[in-house]
Amino acid sequence: IELNPSIQPSKIINTIKTVTSRLSKKEFGLHLKKYYWGTNAVWSRSYCLISVGGAPIEVLKRYIENQHRPE
Image 1 (cartoon, helix red, strand yellow):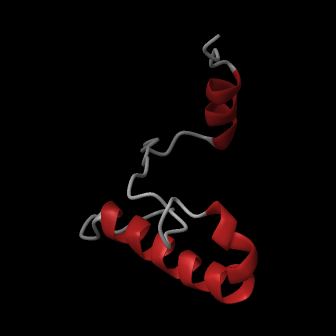
Image 2 (spheres, one colour; image 1 turned 90 degrees about the vertical axis):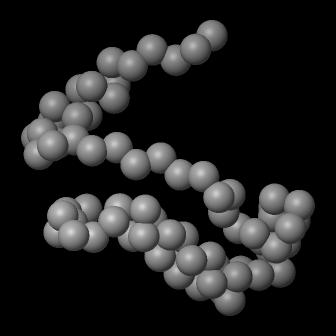
Image 3 (cartoon, helix red, strand yellow; image 1 turned 180 degrees about the vertical axis):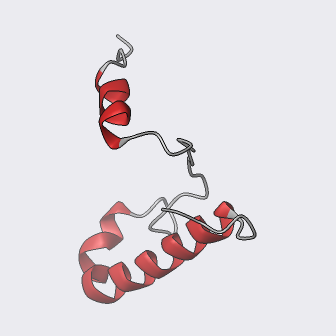
């Protein structure tokens, strides 16, 4: 996602989570109930946002592929 510097990334993430939660509940509400976080929430309150500063996608893919998983 490319954002204007005046837009807070946290607001974009919150909007995406809100909209996808509403749409998911509307379409798959009965099925999703068994997966809620002990409440009516589809998402947890946390999120991760990583900036890559315009690095080419191939560089990012190699970086991710070379990460070691904890044992």
